Length: 277
Image (tube, helix red, strand yellow):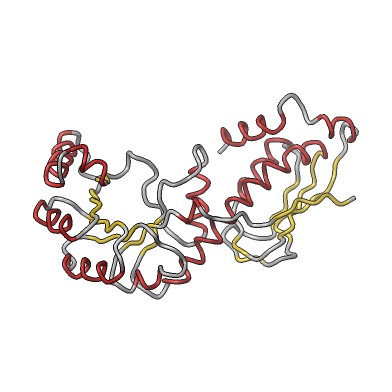
């Protein structure tokens, strides 16, 4: 987190916040607050607190709302009393981060709400912004959904390109299992992506996997595929999932639904940092 904050502040400040240096007397201190301007789920307050600790160790930060809380327009998320130049220098980094995280948390919460009464888990994906994946996946959790892979290193996921490059499903599964055993990676699960029922039957014949991901299956075909698996392996739906069809997908009996939109299509929540005299 501190490395991210340092880089973000350096990117924004550069050689100096010349406007604040010109306008604001040295040593001036001001009171500010974060204003929520539209309803949603708030995320990133811990980041804001840490930023103020860094730019002004004497800052007085008072939090009124917890991360992951539903908010309405007009609410004050926090108040801060800090060095004025430091406050202005941190303003955009705080807003950009919190607006992005809150947008993701809000969208994740909408997906969670659609299926909360069904035995299914909504997963995020690796479709995140480079270098801030940890923030975006944090926001997903605050919204009520679940993180899938943090990177290429924490699960085997045999996708279509792996299968094509390797020479087929059976060979890909065999090589992954051999590699997993030789490198003592038995704690990592194995998911394989299938695009049709032919590939599904090939996967069932191969075995030695933990989860089958159905990629862009139409609903009738997805229902049939889940029935064919019949609980022998975990099942996951992926591709084309949106807020309008996620519940119907969940009703097929699928165990997991991965939704790239949680992070790549979230719209930032409107927030504003105000200074009052």
